[in-house]
Length: 361
Ligand code: SF4
Image (spheres, rainbow, N blue to C red):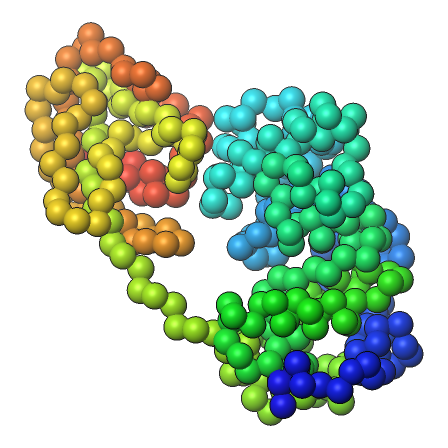
């Protein structure tokens, strides 16, 4: 039986009825929730700045990874106004290691918008939150519910998994997303919406886990229709294989040891981040690009740098180049001595290039 065929309404899904999914998850949350640095105690409203910051950091990253970053950001920038006033490079630098730098750029933009257009106060409704940079449907719902106690349907991967199992939704993702969201809606209570949102996420993260769910200690086990096939849910359509792109990165060294770095264009992948200049990354053919400045020697290094992005694999050859002392850096470029490399906001793939080039000299 699929979720959509469920008889409704019933006290199984009426969120405000004692014994309902929401009622049980809230009781469980009061006893067994995860203690996380950005959370307040049940029934208390946390600081919206903390909620927003943690939610942006948690997108596609684990709780364990985010913890130290969250603390570091709060120490450096204790308020949204302080974050708004920080230089973008400092924010990108502090973000390095969390990936998806577009999120850090939007985080900074969002802080500036809240500080300037909203007098430092986050708006409370999903609609108003959605107008802020970097806030999509999930984050708007999460902040509205958790920071402001508004009834909002918060659906992340954990919630999708719990709903798919609880209601035995066998249709694969992503086609089942609208149905899973509708089911999450039917379970969401009008009271304690923020605690409820966190309760479902916690159940998904700690009990209804992707592998070997702990059904025997699950507070909704007797309501769950899919526990016998839990590990197969949610079903997913097979992912298309990722293409491989290729390119050449230039490690261009001046006689004094300074190396040429360049800022990537603001829009696009790794926008605004620093890089050793590289060619376009292409799926067809072998690139043979020209370095961005005149060089007097160019030697391809042995081996290559490999990195995997969300949508493609990247393979980069690195060419070690020497240039004259007076060579001027091109637009958006600058010469950096090795003892200053640590000051650069370098994404992971660029750090790999630096390591490869330093090793291969
Ligand atoms: Fe998940 Fe098992 Fe609980 Fe069902 S009973 S919601 S499968 S942990």
